[in-house]
Length: 303
Image 1 (cartoon, one colour):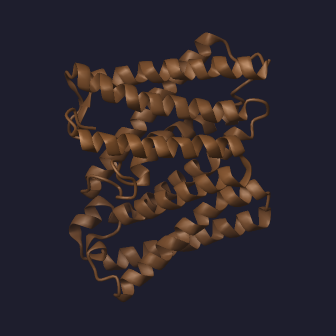
Image 2 (cartoon, one colour):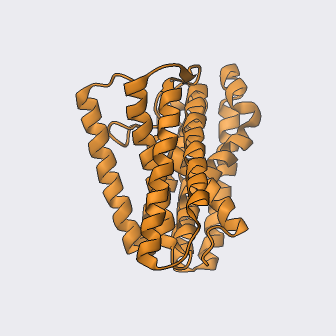
Image 3 (cartoon, one colour):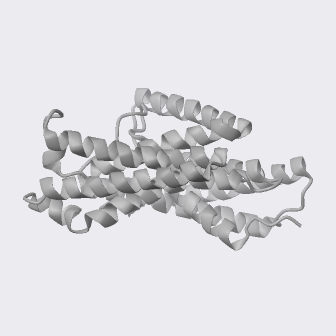
């Protein structure tokens, strides 16, 4: 994020963020298929944008009517469609369709790897950036799609506090982003990682962490009051919220490093003022990974 930003650009960022936040909160409240569809769309866009970023430059610049372009587009859509089907079929409880969706994703990514490897074989720059480990990069993109598509559904399905857990994720990520932006602009100071993200500062990093920590704690207090359940005490909630804020910012930096490797500023142009969907959910995906680990070991607990 830039320290000095034009007012018109800030207006677009705020308007887009508000619309997305309203849609996310509404879908979370409704739950069911509407919640699943929201994450299906997000996961589809994430996989598509990821595969575009790691595609050979010759293929990106090629005419869309060329045979290889059509092949790589087909396999890209198959992979994204397969991943996007996972949250929908998980919500519907359709095991058979879920398995089929997994196979579609695997077929899509396998075909994409073969076509991309063939078209990019003579591109030394691409081979150095992605080509030598292209299968790993593709699987990483699919993992991102799975995280953003599945983990929010698993979090919301937690008895009693599912909605609160998703709200906590939103609160930590969104507040971290806002607090980091304004504290970074107001204080400035030493750069966080100038080679990867030249406009981020340590002041913004710690300001974002403090904001996310407090926001997570407030949401948890509200959840306790509304549910009547005895949840985690203040210290663990503050610690976990702080950790989630740090992890979210790490996810943002990781995506910035990935885009720098790919030689682009934004992952896409779908969201005005923000770039692509991957640009908007990078921190949330990282927090999804943390929540997935927490759910695997039994967090959160209700006493």
